[in-house]
Image 1 (spheres, one colour):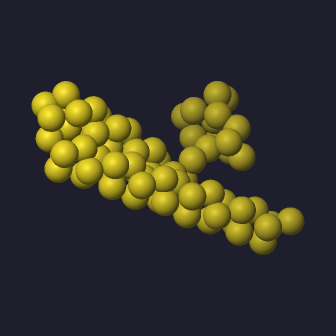
Image 2: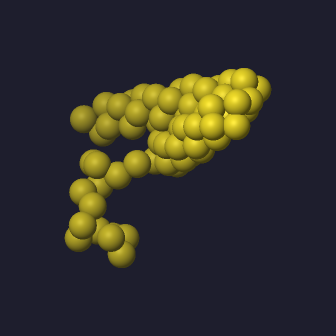
Amino acid sequence: MSQFGLFINQKDSMNGSQIKGAWRSALGRVQEHIGKTIGSADQKAKGLLKQGQGKLLTACGKVRDVLKNSKHS
């Protein structure tokens, strides 16, 4: 059991792809906002791209969890 086992249910924990995806989405939102603020269409587009990549990584992580859980059922 992890040190956070008392606070986090194993079913609700995130795998590596989901964590990376969430971070990439968050960084993309920041980059998009900075692009809007400074008027840089390039930075805004890069931020939107990172958000899309993050959502894709998160979705892959969720699929991985579903497949993993279906094997154990």
